[in-house]
Length: 197
Image (cartoon, rainbow, N blue to C red; front, top):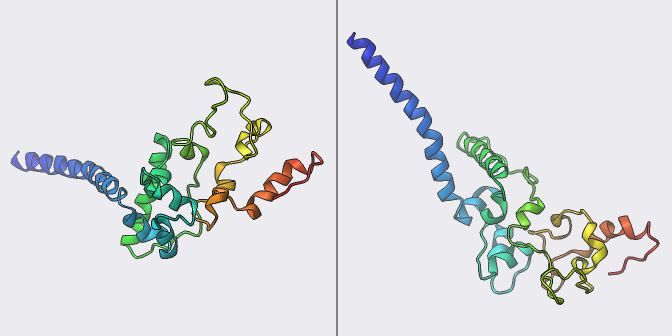
């Protein structure tokens, strides 16, 4: 009898241990991802991290976000804007950690979980502050892409134009015309309009 009770306790202890490991890992991961140096240890080259931390003159969009008064961290953009994406980010981080600890980690050449508009809209909603008259102000005008009413139906992802870790100019909001012009031409050449810039 005593052997069965001891085996039962051992089984309970093993189940408790098995359940506590993921919770403990998640806690460690959550605490670690708050530190940009932890993220950069695997995911960014030193050159990009130096740009990210450059102050007061940002050299890329990620650096401009970090230099803002809010001191945006890597995880603020790359952590996922909703629960499903957050779980996906943690799953990738978990697999990457296992690969790293087993000596089989290779830095990816691209993002396995690219930023979506949802991540940008965590802070950038509305995209353009509508200030002409009322809070609704549908006729805000200007020369910026986002202030032209006809562009409100364009479904191009934010990151197609706003590339976060690419050198750029602050006066152009770090939008690289070489990347953007082909996107503009998709509509404007079929409309018979010239693309400048």
